[in-house]
Every structure is written in structure tokens, then in C-alpha cells.
Image (cartoon, rainbow, N blue to C red; front, side, top):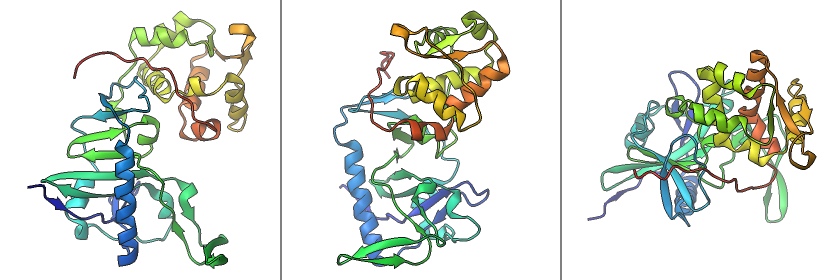
Length: 301
């Protein structure tokens, strides 16, 4: 018998030590709307998916694919919140609590298995009490009093029992610490990286020979994000100026296309690598959707 235990209580995943998961109390009317919203988003999350690919830290999925991680370590107790929602402390909007939210989630139990539906959350979804927000009712705009938040129009990830499924590692690691799942670049990975047409290394071999664990992890993260495929070097350099970072360009690429100069100095290299992997970086750059070419290891899992 297909047994579905309804829940769909709404929770916030925060960065507050000791209170990583908090329950968002809802009125009965709002609870019904949240349930329908997340059900619809769960359907859309899987709509058109033809294949699920085990995450390896390098492959970027196509539009008809999902990535998955087996035996995901739920260190924050997300599944426990779905099982026992009333045992989770209620969210209190004080002391910048809204700014601490990293994700919004709900879930349910089906045939004894827990399914968690997660949305990413950032400051753009916060409605501050000090602002002047307007809401429309019967073609009349009125002022929204107090603070609050808005929900996203799609899911970022789904936890199915012990498996975590997602399409964007970049957005996933804004919610979770994924360092345990991010491998270091191999020597072959580094050789591929230094040949990227957007980059010009002062000495490619020195970069490969001196790459420490930090640099090797950053190489994988930068490759996984696809940022060098999404944005031209000139836009990257322009954005870097807002972060007080001066990125040099060289017009020695294909057809005179500008390239990012990667100097020999280790400290400067790490500053550029950190910038390319920063969370704030993708948002202003990715003003349109692109489909990046992927490199997939055709192993059977």
C-alpha cells in the first residue's frame, strides 16, 4: 500500500550555532498554500529529467539531468525535523535572524522514506520592517507592515532518504558545507585548467607544480561552476574592480579575445582563484542562461 504521511511544516536552515533548524509557524491558510507550492515545485524539479548522474565534482549536468550524492550526511538534523516538527524550536524574528537563513525547506514521509524539499535563500528575499513594501489587493496597493520573507519559485535540491539530488553545485553549497564532497584536482585536471582559453598563465608548469590542496579544490569548484564558460574575461575584470581586485588582461586569445592573466606570485594567484569562486560573483555576471559544454566520465555507478 502506498502510504503518504503529510507534513509540509515549513523550516528554516540557518547558520546560527546550536539552532541550525527552526520551524516557521504558519496559519492554516498559509500552510495550505505552502503545501501546494512545494508539491508543484517538486513536480517541476523532476519534470523532463531523463537521467541522474552521480556527482564527481567536475561534471555539469544538462537540462535533462540531475546530479546526486549517495549517503548524504545530514549533520544539521533536517530529516529529524520532518519526523518530529513539534520538537523543533520556533523561528523568532529578532537580532538579524532573517539574515541567518540559508535555506527554506519542508518535507513528508512516503512508504517510510523521508523526502525533503529545499529552496535556497538569500538576503534578496528578506522584507525588512524598515522598508516600504507594497502589496496589491483588488488593484489597490497597500503598505505591507512589518518584516518577512518571500519564497523562491523553484527547488534547489531534494533529499530522498539518504540521497541528495540537485542540478547546481554552486547554489547547493550556499546551503550546505560541501567540502567533504569536493575532491582535489588531479594533475590531469590541472593540465586541463591551465589550457583554458580564457586564462593566460605566466608559467603553467609552475602553477601545476606548486598547486597545494587549497588551489586544487578551487580548480574543481571553478570548473564545476562554469564561470569561465559563462562570462568573458572583460566582464570578469570589470566586476573584480568592485572588490578592489585588479585583474590584468591580455589580448592574446583566439581572434584577439581578452584573457585573464594568472601571475606567478602565489598570493596573487590565490586572490584571483578566490574571486572566481566567490558566491557573490556569479549573480551579477550571469545575466542570462547559458548551456556550458560538459566533460563526463562515462562510468557505470
